[in-house]
Length: 335
Image (tube, rainbow, N blue to C red):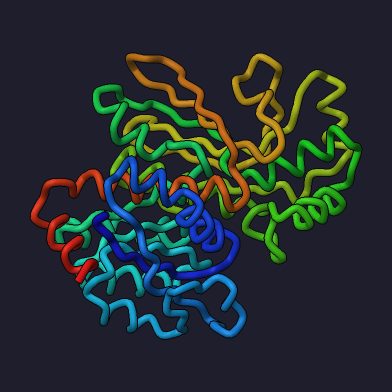
């Protein structure tokens, strides 16, 4: 069996999910892709805390170990924040390594830059996991909507906020109570600011803007409002009128200008996002030919994000099959 070596940056919720599923789905990967995947290096801040996850991999805080290993073909990045993630991915691409990221903040800022750098270095960037959890929205837009002009996107892009709003309405909880529950279940970070203040959804929306329109609006022009000011009374008042408050991200082109917003909206029962509950995400695409298409799926937790990263791995490996690059990588990793 041919072998490809990979590196994993970060062992938080997402990193552990990737590690777990690369192992548990090894036979499926081998059968479907014709290669085995070996995690050669794991880079974390505090290696002493993660020996249970290392296996045969080198566990280190020194990223240079990845760059110094020519056998490593693909780098999985699951770090929080813009740095050192951006620097690590930049150096990986310059070293001729393909990269797969789940880092929506970093990619909202630097995604276009990384894609251009990858093209110049003849490697690929997988970023499906940055946006909408387990929904394959990036590949859908890249591969399945090449003729349709997407006029507008409206989505629930943050599973944590959606879970909180659902629990408030269904179980009459305060926002703080619902947030604590989300944190207990692993849907929200210890610092939930990015989720409940709308930054997470905003970053994802900017990534979609870049992909769809090859540009982003001025960030300061985008109305961004989270759910932190929503009270149980607000929820119940809308519920009494047959409506549900959802945290929506929306973007469309109007007079050649990008109009974007991230804010709570009360939806009537005939809206396609009305029934999206719990940690699920959903996106409504409005194409000029197809009309409205709604995609939905899990949006919070390690498994949906890990799933998206591993599917990006499959896409990269399939794209290399039969190429000189694939032969080089496999031969190098096997020696």
